[in-house]
Image (cartoon, rainbow, N blue to C red; front, side, top):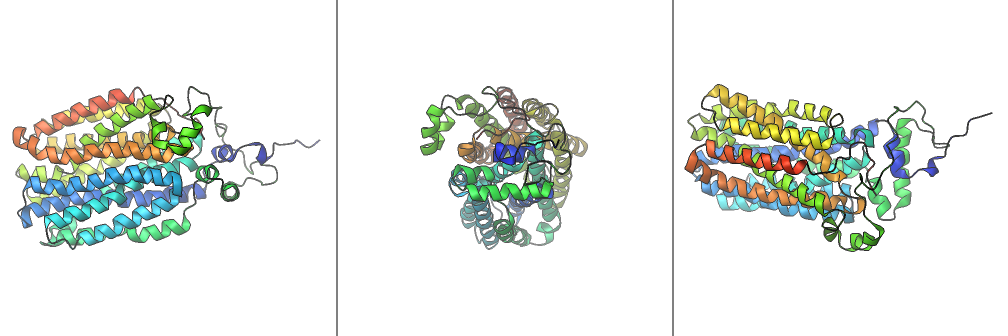
Length: 468
């Protein structure tokens, strides 16, 4: 007698996606989003080298140049908030492609700036696109990744940031010092996202969960079947062509471990998505998440945007400071690798808190650095732990919210965090004038401690299906 297997139709499309093994289709989604992520990082990283050279060739004051960075982060704060809302209304893929186009074109135009004021204005526009892209990309990838490895996949996505920042450091080292217009050529290279936006729009799939939430069931079914075909799953009876790993089927969701929203709250969720973030079910995790985002942004951008300039101020030549920054940047890659490994072993909460604590210790040690060796060692430690924490944070964030407000929740968390990235570059010159390099890095260490404490209050949703 032939064994009867359950039909595909007996499971939801989300459950079917969660049960699939990793396929080439998943890899294409990850790579497409990751390249956009790397280009984003390259653009943000380039401005630190541009500021360092403009301080020399334009004889601009540090207080004036700090607004170049902060204007970009102001745009990122607004962009992250609006991008998440638009992603929940227009779709993840559409908004992702649009943001790439906006900041790619604006970065190219920034190369033509003739004054600090013009550069500040254009960096604000760049920030609008940059800020909107990151939470949208992480939301898109998280909604395709199988539940059992979703956290690891998002950390791998975030690791593309290190690739982009390393590219920025290489451009800063080899291109920016070539002449007084080296910074212009660097920003022209940063216009590459405008081209990649076309590829994203034509080749990336739309989120199945988003399509279902907007009533586009036929498109959602077609997308799921494409992924099932890539995995060798039969359409006739839903049985896998090859055995799926034993942990492939995610555990059943429970009210205590999912980002569920009660039936009574659904009307609010549909009409006022932002209000839902502070409803009874989600208020606690939203507040804790925003605290983590704020503190991590403050410390990361305060440290790394000004690092080349601080090294120059400490007496190192411009090219030498760029070399040291490049070495420190390379430590980001192993940080992501370890975070990606631990996030499915230790869980989200423990991994995030440990890396934040490591960042606090590293920032405190960097505050005591007084020679090249200690600068490179403690700077590399900070880079390792800080970027590992970023990877875990991006993995945690989309999981905390249901589908209809997932983009909004991720976007507003990132947007609130960007407020800190606006403030930090403005405060670093003031703190440095008052207490040298030691004072700002001691402050960064304190912010990391607060972030670690807040991270311990977040729920851990390792291996749980995304709530719809």
